[in-house]
Structures are given as C-alpha cells and as structure tokens.
Image (cartoon, rainbow, N blue to C red; front, side, top):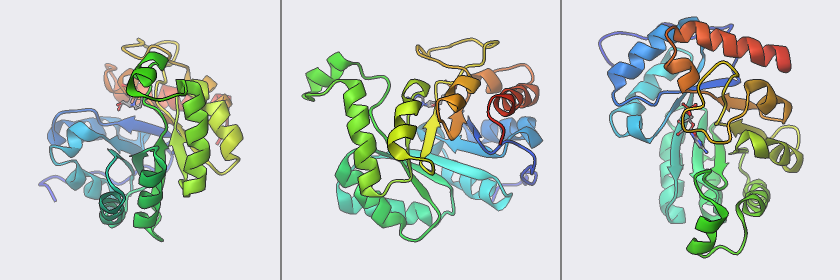
Amino acid sequence: MSATTLAPSPVKADPRLIIPLDLPTVGEARDMIARLGDAVVFYKIGLELLATGGMGLAHELKASGHKVFLDWKLHDIGTTVQRAASALAGAGCDFLTVHGEPQVMEAAVKGRGTSSLKVLAVTVLTSLTDEDLKETGYALGARDLVARRIRQAIDAGCDGVISSPHEAALAREVGGPGFLVVTPGVRPEWSAKNDQARAATPAYALEQGASHLVCGRPITAANDPHAAALRVAEEMAAAVPL
Ligand code: C5P
C-alpha cells in the first residue's frame, strides 16, 4: 500500500465506461485517478503500467471499491496461462484479457476457476491487416477470423471479447445477450482521433451492442478529465440508458 489512499469508489459513475491508465508510472496513474474522482469507477491497467507496479495499484483500486480491468493479453502454453489466470483471480479484479486462441482461452477459464474474474478474448489485434494475417500464415482475413474466434471464445467458456465498435454487432449477435463486448477505439465527435483509424462514437459503440467502452485520451488528455468523463457518460446514457 502506498502512502496516500485512494478516495472511495463513486457510486454514480457509469460502470460501462472504462478509462485506460496508459501512463508510465503508478504515481501519474494515481494523479489521474484523483483528477477523475467521482466521474469514473472502472479502470484498465495495461502492459506499460503492469511493468511498473500496476498490480499494486490494482489491489489499491479494488480496496477502494473500484472495478479493475487487467489488460495482460496472456499468450503462452496452457499450464502457464492457467497458473497466471489463477494467480490473477486471487487479486479480486474484474476483467482479464487473453489472446483468442482456443488453448489459451480454455486454460485461462480453467485458471480463474470459480472466482468472479471475467475472461475476455482479444480476437484479432486491430493493428493487423488482412495482408499481415496472410503473411503470418492465416488463411482467413481479419473479419472472418474475428467471427471464428468469437465462436471459439464462447466454446472455451470466455465471458466476452475485445472488439472494435465496427465488429461489436457481430460479437453481440454471436455471443447473445449476456456476453461482454468491450470496445476500444471510441472517440466522441468533439475529440481528436489520435491514432485510432476506425474510431466510433460512444453512442454508436453502445448501439452496436457494446457492453463496455474503453475511452482513453479524449478523457485523460483533456484539460479537465473529470468534465470530459462526465460528458462521455452523458452521451452514453442518452444513447443507451443504463
Ligand atoms: O486513448 P485511447 O482511447 O486510444 O486508448 C485505447 C486503449 O485501448 C489503449 O489502452 C489501447 O492499448 C487499447 N486498445 C486499443 N485498440 C485495440 C485494443 C486495445 O486501442 N484494438
């Protein structure tokens, strides 16, 4: 536990809005959490922060009542993935990502056991084009591979997938009502697109069937992150009420 304690989790924030803490140090992440205050309840911790003490912050966030998405994107032999998922389930976090290969997904589901940790599959990294997949040796293009892996994720017992807003409708259709469909690449009309080439608005992503949105820089790089988070949450509530 670090010197300062995080404020208790807000009860009013929209739990469908996930803020990625894409920051180099835990100290900077803590400052961002303080600035966002009662506007955000759900945080994503990715590889950069995991490499610099992110698991400690995850424990702290959970202890203060927040929700935590561990974006580990696990990918290894079954035994290793199973043990890692089991260890991570002990942290009491909410979401964990793994790569969408059947062996990997099955092992992660086995590892989390009866814990409440939800296992989400990264179907195909959105940085990969059809050409990249062909070069790697895959016979299918990106969209067909995404569809296949959504079905495999369900067969493996995964709770959901990470999907671009443009594939959210497909994930929702194949996965059914309770399936988690978590979409990054979300940009409100009023924000910069940054490097998100196929960005979509929060309203569009929810209308397409997303259950959760990951929205980073439009909020974290805003002059007033708290106000920006509330604005995104308002747009979400207006499009698809909680
Ligand atoms: O700042 P921005 O909203 O672009 O952040 C998006 C977050 O979602 C980042 O943490 C990024 O790594 C993650 N992500 C993504 N696209 C994917 C999968 C994950 O942008 N296809």
